[in-house]
Amino acid sequence: MTAADLPRVVEIERKSKAHPWSEAMLRAEVEAGPVSRPKVAVIGEQVVGFIMAWFVADEVHIINLVVHPEFQRQGMATRLLEQVCDEAREQGAEKVFLEVRESNQPAISLYKKFGFREAGIRPQYYQDTGEDALLMIKKLGR
Figure (cartoon, one colour):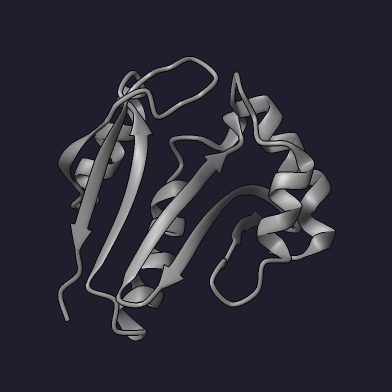
């Protein structure tokens, strides 16, 4: 992901979430340096989704994964997850983790199919609603 992708990324974020990240928050991830590694999914020349992950020591933390509603259920999120997990393995990471809203059953199903397992609850994690987050972890094989 580059700064040139941000207008479309902001649009996707706004169309996909009731409480989207601000443009400033998304831009900060693009400009954050080597720890933050945002990536986009592209069809033709159009950005249709994105993932943001932090690579820290032997862990990767997925902080945002969004696919435009018109392109969901076409394997975009899976491809983005694969790309991050492949890069994590290459860099020697042992696990990938993320938080997801307990009410987001489609995302939870996707993560489980991808090998993530429930590891705990983060109470009142989402400030906008006070909803709990489900902590999910995927251990990476070498």
